[in-house]
Length: 281
Image (cartoon, rainbow, N blue to C red; front, side):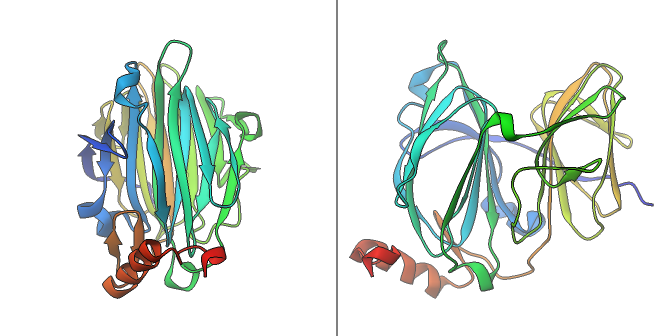
């Protein structure tokens, strides 16, 4: 058994997206070859509603899955499949864009105006990019928690921990998506199949992975191995994400991610012409 070690670290950069939502992009366009099959990770959080209320108005997606995980506050959403509602603290919105979906996400914050969460984009393989779109709304109560007995509490969004399986299944890249909290002196161990891309993003406290101390706001891309071991001195909270690499070319056109530039141009032209969605054709 080989324990994965830290291969490279990334600090988020301040940016804005949508209609002016301020966020930290932990990784994105230029780092995509390193993170295959993942395309982007954004951390959004503010106690100033002016930095997020403009939200992400109606826009298209094709060829990817978007995973929104809310820590604090509410996000109002709607899409071209007819889904609408509000996701709250602890909820997950897992959207498979497939051949095409148009949606909006409008952060509302909580009663004190605080908004906090993550959005992860996962790529779809060429054979599934034009699959039918699908939307899954997972409430906080559906996400199981596992206590590991060494000061670790694990929320299992996708994948399996100690025989407990998360509520999101049937995803092509077979991802693992965990929210792990470690108390002072806590330790966490998780089997992660060799060959999968894996990373740890620390968003509270600091964590030790091997001989590397990973500070708050830092993502650690892990080398290959069979297990991930994380320890905390004063405590930490982090995401552990893993998935099977696709090894396919990536052509990026904003919210459209395909395998060739021609496919991206075709999608954008369909959107302009009003033939992007199945019901439009």
